[in-house]
Length: 236
Image 1 (tube, rainbow, N blue to C red):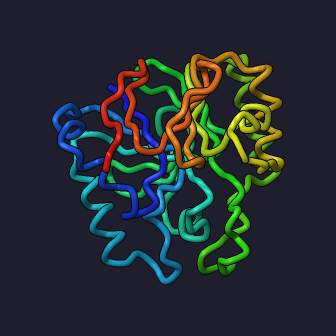
Image 2: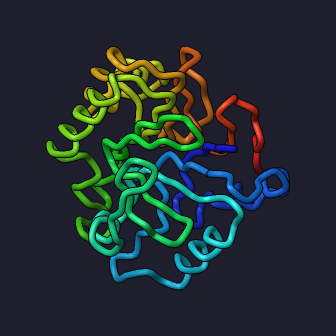
Image 3: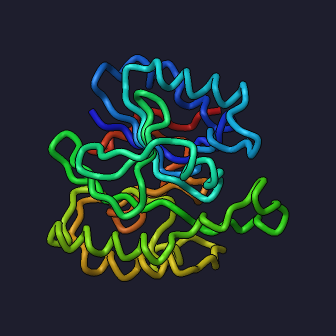
């Protein structure tokens, strides 16, 4: 079984993964995908005790934890401190034995389903953060990452089962009230959403649980299976 959820922001929103209803359902061989803002690779001085505690917690769960990056990650550590490897057809950073960062522009085959992954987003709060300590310019993809994404999609005939990102295409994002955020990444997603055949698009970032146009699922507190069964909701 493959489960999908939204941001955990380090220890801030990780408690949903300890909910009894979720923990009773998951079993050995399952996967949990986190749609960005993983946040457990954050401290600019290196892995601290709190990060180690939660990474070890995830590593001892029966499922394998997978995540795309959001905008609240330490990209210097994420890109340099963990070994890059090929896993299920795409590039990953291995964080622990059962924790993998799904890199940008990759296509993975998991349980006979194809996933296109592309992390990143713009931090609207970057003006109160410090570059190299709490904000990193790599939160948005490089030109090389955009190019690799397009090449991989062409090789897949522009057809996957699921898309996993942190933010949305521009036109879909504009359907969220009072949201005016737009950047090169949302415009890139706008381009590919019109040429890509997919069943469903999952993302985080917007701190809400909302389905838009029946295909774009924003996740925050809910934990869903790919067939949309709600496993955790309304967590207090």
